[in-house]
Length: 462
Image 1 (spheres, one colour):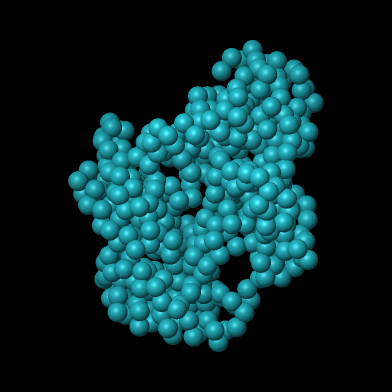
Image 2 (spheres, helix red, strand yellow; image 1 turned 30 degrees about the horizontal axis):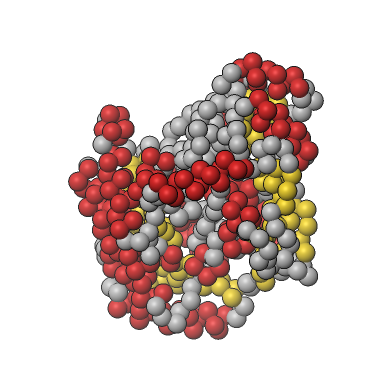
């Protein structure tokens, strides 16, 4: 990146909140993706939409790369400034602007943390369901940009299902609303949904209008231990084909739970001989209904080979189980350098995918820790470096990863369910998109960002 243009930018807007010292910029050089480090030339921390508009217009005119960043919890490198330029951090745009109880909506800025919106909505007996594992730290702008999911997607859906309108600053500086604050809208192209999952490639999201639902008052958890991965995955198909409707079905390998429980110093009821576990959550408004659901699920799990089935005895234990599950990804990373692959297939194909992942791991000599949202076929595959050489890690392991993605495609799935493509997965995109797909998406990118300044170096653009 031409430092002269950065200097012009800083001089043009001297009264804005800038970070330009190299040691300070380094804090914005990484996210949660592997061990990548890409320092920006400067960091812009805006406090208003107008500031963003003015700076983007200047960057567009001078071809300065701009990479949007929320909390930096992404797992695909979407917030990495791989071409230098500036990072635009939304950390100061963190206000909940309105909770509308009459219309069951909330309007928030992109820097609002997911869990903070949940707490604020709960004061009105309302609920914002999307709950990525990082909900305690990830921001809603990042959730929208990556189309985040979470455990409760089985019952409630994903982030995409709750976004009804967005205020966006285009790279040329114009400010638009993508839709209307209504739950239905069939007027023109759906620009709102185009921006969900767009990974900061089309514009900067500055306000978000989300749907809310009534807050469930009761929750019960059920933990089932299985002797092997396949019987565990097959149980999911049986449950989802029944009248039982859990809010979440989470799949966890014993190896991942052990790492998480030890790192977080959290108690977990390990069962001798269990290779994997399913964590079921049921929520609603009547305890009797939840107990009925749990009674119905017992025979289904037993028929699938569960060796022990345990309901959570109280809310404290339930919180411990959730803590272990949500911390697996982060604690595995502390255990070893790793690559996290966000695979997704039709639910029925999950046992086939699991077996394939383990077989490919044996073929290429790597250990994998698998966990994820079994209820919607979303399997996170954490591949551990352990004692593999740097050369093997760089050149051979990706061949195994490509085989995993080929299996996903063959099974009717794709290479990312909720983490996005970003920087780390772009080399595999040709497994699921042909030239026609890429031509159309490049055309969309060009319309919104004719100079290619937004998030360059990722899966599309320069």
